[in-house]
Image 1 (cartoon, rainbow, N blue to C red):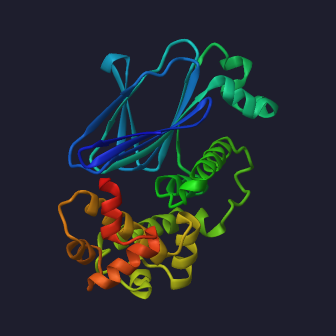
Image 2: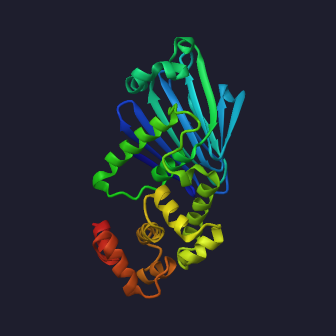
Length: 295
C-alpha cells in the first residue's frame, strides 16, 4: 500500500492481489491536481468519478475526455499503451481499478461472450465506454472510499469489495430486474444520503439530531437510518464517531494542538469526555497514544 498526501488531498495506491491495483484519489484543495502513471496495453482500466470532475488526457495532450461526477470510464486497448494522465478538478474524488487482461479473463472465462471487448471482434481493437454509475455501484464505491474496518480484516474486506465492484460493472441482468436494495434504485435517495453524510462531517462539533438531519435532506427518519446503513455500512452517529476520532488522532499527531483543544474541535465540551471517547476507539488515552508514537 502506498499513500501520498498532496496539499489538501491524498492519493492511495493499493495492490489488491496479483493483477489488480486500486487507486484512490481525493483532491480536497481549491486547485487542480494532476496524476501520471505508466500503464501498458496488457491492462484494462476502470475509473469511477464519485465527486467533482476528472479530465483524462491522451496522446501527449492532443485529446482529452471529461468524466463528471457519478460517471465511470472503461479503457481497453491492445494496440497501444494507455498511460494514466488525469487532471482532478477541485473537490474531486475518484476510485480506479487497473486490472491485467489475463486476470480479467480468468474471472470471466465463462461469460466472455457476454462482454463486448472479450469477443473476437475486439481482440485487436480498442474499447472505450463511459456510463453512469448505478446505485448499486455507488454503494460499493462509498464503502471503499469511507471504509471503517478493523486493520485485521481490512485486506479481506478490500478484496471482497473490489470483486463485488467488478461483478456489478459487468452485470448483464435485464434492465427491469430490481437492484439489491429497492430504496437505493432511486438516485435521488442516494444523493440525499450523501448530503446527510456531508452535513454531519461539516458540522461534526455540533451535529444536528437525526430528526433535524432527516428534515434537512428531505427523507423520513426511517429511510435516513436504513439508507445510511446500506451505503456506509454503519449508523449515522457511529460513522460520525469514527470520523471524529480519526480527525482527533491526526490533530494530535500534528503536535499543533493540546488535548483540550482537540476535544473541543471535534465536539466534546470537557476533556474527560473526549479522553473517554478516544480510549473507547483506540484503547488508550490521547496522552499515552502520543507517547507511544514518539518512541
